[in-house]
Amino acid sequence: MEGIEHKSISVNGLSIHIAEKGHGPLVLFLHGFPELWYSWRHQIVYLADQGYRAVAPDLRGYGDTTGAPVNDHTKFTVYHLVGDLIGLLDAITSDQGEKVFVVGHDWGAYVAWHLCMFRPDRVKALVNLSVPFMPWNPMGDMVQMLRAAYGEDHYVVRFQEPGDIEAELARMDAKTIVKKFMTFRESGPIYFPKGKGFHHSPDDVIVSLPPWLSEDDVEYFASKLEKAGISGGVNYYRVLHLNWELSASWSGAKVTVPTKFITGDEDLVYHMPGVKDYIEGDGFRKDVPFLEEVVVIKGAAHFINQEKPDEINKHILEFIRKF
Image (tube, rainbow, N blue to C red; front, side, top):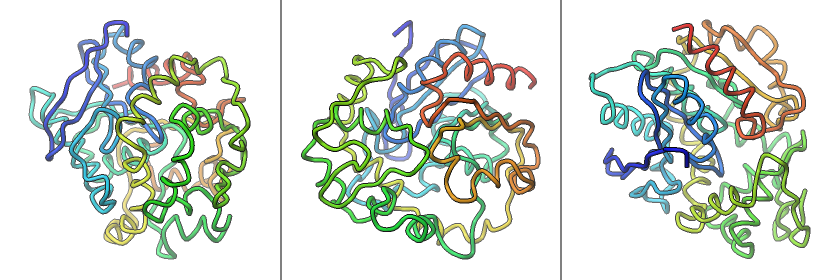
C-alpha cells in the first residue's frame, strides 16, 4: 500500500510485525480493538509525506505479530505491553533511549498513557484518541464499574470469562465480526446478551458499510482476524483486574509529557459515565498537567482516525511540529 514496508522484529519473545514508511523523527502509532496497524494506513502515508518516519505495529496478540500465549491472559498486562514497546523502540532506533512521538487510539491510547507514565524519557509528545487517561481508582477496576453501571451483558463484562465470547462469535464469519464492531456508532454501550450475539445488530441483519470503510478494508481486517483469532485482543479486557491490582503503586501518578487529546462527540467512550465531565473538567488536566488541547470532533464516532482521516492527520501534524 503506497510504499509501506513490512518487517518482523524480535522483541520479548515475540515476533512483532511493523508497518513503516518515511524518514525523519519517528512517530509510533498504536491501534485498538479489534484492529491492526492497518487502522493507521491514512496517517502512515500522510506523516511520511510530511517528513516523518511512521511506524505502526500489530500489538501483542494481533495480526501478524506472533509468539504471545493467547490462552493465558495474564501475559497481556499493561506492563507486558509497555515492555513490548520499549523493546521495539530499542530495536528500531539507532540511538539508545531515543525519544519518539506516540499516537494511540482505543486500547492503543490506554497503552500509550501508561508508556508515558512509566517511561516519559522515551516520549517527545503524545496524541491520544478516544480513550482518556484513567487514573488508578481505589474503589475498584473498570470491569466492576461497568458491571455496576450496565450489567452483565455489557461487552467488557462478557469478555471476562475465557472462551465465552469466543464461542459466541464462532458462529459468525470474520468479516461479519469486523463489520458489526467497526460500524457501531451509538453513543450507548455495546451489549452481548448471552446466546444472542450483538444486541445492536442481530445475526441476520446485513451490515451496510460507511464511506470510510470499504469491503477491501474489511477483507484485510478479517483475514488477519482469521489468522490470529480474537482471544489475543479480548485478553486486554480480561487482564483489567490484574492491571488494577498491579498498578496500586501508581496511584496519584501523572502523565508528564506534552499531550493532545481528540475524540468524537458520538464516541461510545465519550458517553460512558463520568468520562465527559472528566475530559471537560479539571480532573483530566490535573492528571495530565501538560495537556495542551482537547478536541471534540462533531459527528465523529469511535473509529475516528479512519472515519475522519484528513482532520486527524492535520491535528497530529499541527501538534508534533511544535517539538
